[in-house]
Image (cartoon, rainbow over all chains, first blue to last red; front, top):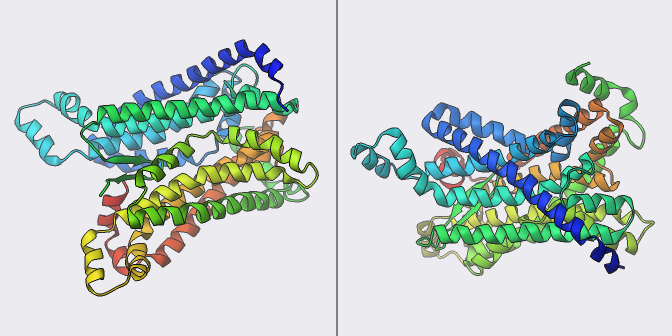
Length: 227
Length: 238
């Protein structure tokens, strides 16, 4: 059923598409993180903006990725922007929630102690709040990375110049050639799993003191501790 | 013509409301695909989540594997199952099963994790009190733990529903039906009205599904808990 000769002939292209896949996801996660960080700080500092910021990011999540890519083509054409705007938007939902929750979970005593020590707002943010929020921020990073890697495959509908490993999936389907279909599908799954495991390890390394499992989901963030 | 008028024109054209590619047919297909996927996911995830939440056993294994499931790209899952199902039965329209399978994979993690978290989050003192009153284990589960966990469990189901209804559109990339048809066809025909019409229909479906779940949740939540929702919601889901 599978044509291994064809696979061997296309190893170079596999490497190219894998790198493209990581690159397309990396841009979105990086930019999404920076925007979300600013939004989360704003949401926590100015309470009135908290609800609206979370509500808007929730609504974004209900738009099918396929639709967002398609709708943007009429505005930005088939360019890198059309790929990155939706990918970045979806990371916002996850990041804003987790980063805001990370800041929110800090006990008020700790913040008061920091104020009492004479920390300025900026000092308190960088030297107290950010370090304490790290576990939830990394949990968000893990989720955002994995879901962005999955979404990159969908960008293949925008044509040959994008899609990462999704390129093989779509081309394999159009040519009714299962070998090529698997050539894209299996590595894209492995890539997502590898990223998940790697970031899970980072998560554990950054919080060695905690036996707590942080379970995060874009629309539900449930913190659970083992009893 | 701007996007809004294009969308309105497309949606109000009677041609798009009849025939095998009409909105009623596609809407029905979409509801069936999402509904079947969610029911299967509930049947798998709810018992497992409730079991580990109730007993506290195998927690790490279940939560970690649920997290791992979530990492699977839906498009890749559909693609992997596709040649197998077409080989199994090219005639009988078996083709829609890959989408359902991918949607089950998508829906299981939030339902399972929240079912577990809902039960695990029930106050230990309340359970002690129930036991002290002589309630049996099944009674405690059915009359104390489950009702108290309804809000958290419902949040998981709600989140799964939103994701499934939105993502089921991906099946159309591989020639299946549902509302994704309008998105994929709209892209290939360069028809913005059709794309945005599809987006609106999916959004409407998501909102209806959310309302339905909210109603069921309200009916199942104990009255005392409804009064205290502000505090419990703040504690359980951020």
